[in-house]
Image 1 (cartoon, rainbow over the protein chains, first blue to last red):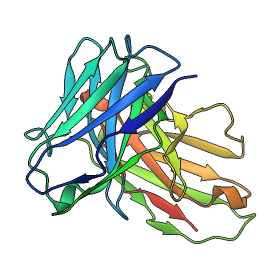
Image 2 (image 1 turned 90 degrees about the vertical axis):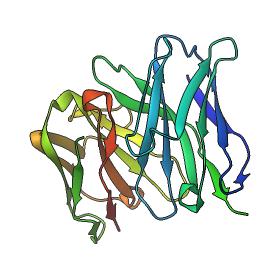
Image 3 (image 1 turned 180 degrees about the horizontal axis):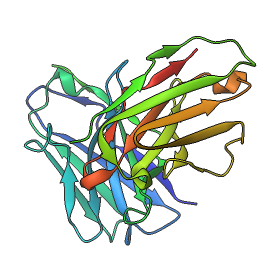
Image 4 (image 1 turned 45 degrees about the vertical axis):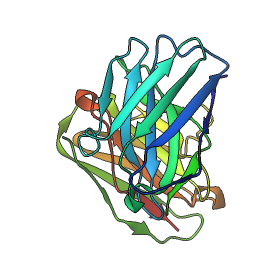
Length: 120
Length: 106
């Protein structure tokens, strides 16, 4: 079955760029949508954005000016970049497949999550 | 942008009782685009239902989801220790996703 795993730096300095990668195993990233979601400590889930294998992406309006999601079909992974980070971007970042997008969209499966802390 | 409001924020119940969780949308949404997730401490969320009421394999039938329009409900009967968690509703309309604020069942 499809499995996802996030990777990247766990510590980012304020004003710098956060970069994470989600590696997909057990299936191809083609022909599906892929999402990033985050959760600040003690807070609810927040959708960041998603990308289709064609390259088209949608983003949370509150983050649109700072976020980009890309994918690499040769490496079977997709990535998140978030620029000009502040302490408010400290969160556990999850990647997930947004399956059956055109019929009955749902986020499944999810990666285990990765804590990213923004601190000097 | 569709805003999802979940209530109550916290539900305190004893095992064996029934939990009723509400998810209200700020505008009508196609039930196809409504999903429910369970999250336990330190874990990633787990999909429970999609299309408002379609149960995912492995979810017991004492847990039921229903609703349409702006009102959606998750009902957990005969609460078991493994049911105590945070539950989120989520919608995917207009290609912009959003989550509710969650309900903690404790």
